[in-house]
Image (tube, rainbow, N blue to C red; front, side):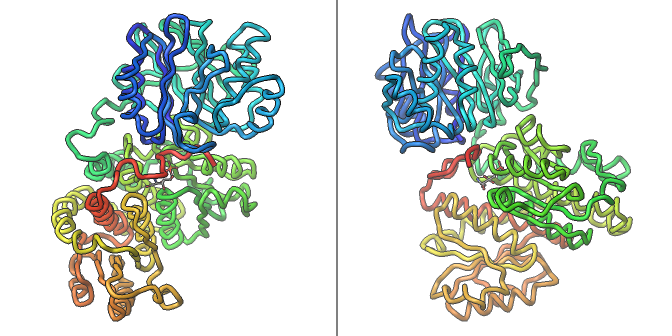
Length: 612
Ligand code: AGP
């Protein structure tokens, strides 16, 4: 939930840390700081606000040195403030720590340390780590051992970077349930919460595992387990390039990522069909007839946007495969003692692969004997590592907090998984499969088409809707689900109150909220349900609503009831959600732009939610 970066080498660490932190701002941006080893002391600069504030602070009060750690924060313990910003340091300023995660037993540790005479200055849980390391260091004069002993006392999650004045040539890193990689350069090495932070310098890294530590020097990296045994790790080479982490001329990452969707969908499709196009190949995942016949239900678990992609999967699997599918948000699933066993296939979906609730849901599912299929974007992430099988969504970096291209890739994954299971279980014939495949092949160019046409239309009518205070998304079936995603996007980046409703449910209560000029987005791409939803639109129109409809080409009678219509190209019924969501993304984007909001870094949010 926070971003960490660290550097050991020959350059001045500060610019490396600042550019790294800037690439990690998607993980949190309410305060930032750096600690740099100077001659015989640690120079710490930290401040409330974004990394730009820190950059300005450093211009007035510079620090320099060849080893340093940096942090950009999403507050959990203690409000965003200068004092609560990381790094935190020991009372004698000899040890500095940056931390991402939550120390659950921090109060107990704090009480203990206060009794030993340690003074606390911040409201954070992290400060206990700095004092505890100091305490153990004073016992044995061995920094690695002191960090290791500290980790044994800590309950919760952590990615840590530690500096000590007595060790002017190294920094120590450790992780448990919060991501951390050790970047490997030539004569310089790094730590980072995520690869974009260090892509300017290297693509090679060790991905640290849970309860592992690293001692990082400019020319040497050693990895240890929590018991202090040295361990080996293969170097992982990231395939993404620097441009992937830059805006490339777009005003916001979100817009860039929206425009990357034709390629993302194409990449996902081109790699997942057999050469003759007659079957699906899911990265060698062993979910064949035998395994699938042993499964009597599917459970889909995820958070936020990933959950909505999962709901699309639920609708499709139930309708096409005729297997019972449950779907839950991970934060509910993990505490409800779900009805799953070894005959359940649990599908967890996550862009980051680090979402704490989803990861815990995965572990719970495994402990109950279920087989877990991870649908994950971030290679080597915790969820990808712990799932029994992984289908990567090949969306590339997604930097904007509001997920767009990762959602599309997840939806394509739902299409592929549904078709694969249907085929293995004989629930779809060759003809229908071929028909859907043909429609899928058209998706990239159809998305392009929507991007080209809808953008002008949406920009043209955004002014008309910008004053809206409440927005309702209505639809039936898959249109209802895709409306959930549209509504979330509008909340996240335009800060508009918006709610998705099953169109047929309106009359059971929510319609009471419709008044003169309330904006209703009607998603009507499911032709079998077109007339039904059109009637519901008429009902809200009759009560004064303004209606923006998203419909499939050829269904122009929707213009009788809607104020504005955006058409998506004609496609197979199971694929409409992917297309219908593109105008929704653009609408949220241009509404937020019109309202002057910080689109890539919406308030109170962070990209990767690694705390509960
Ligand atoms: C999407 O726009 C959101 N920022 C959020 O709902 C996100 O999808 C959710 O936190 C899940 O993240 P994950 O896919 O990385 O697990």
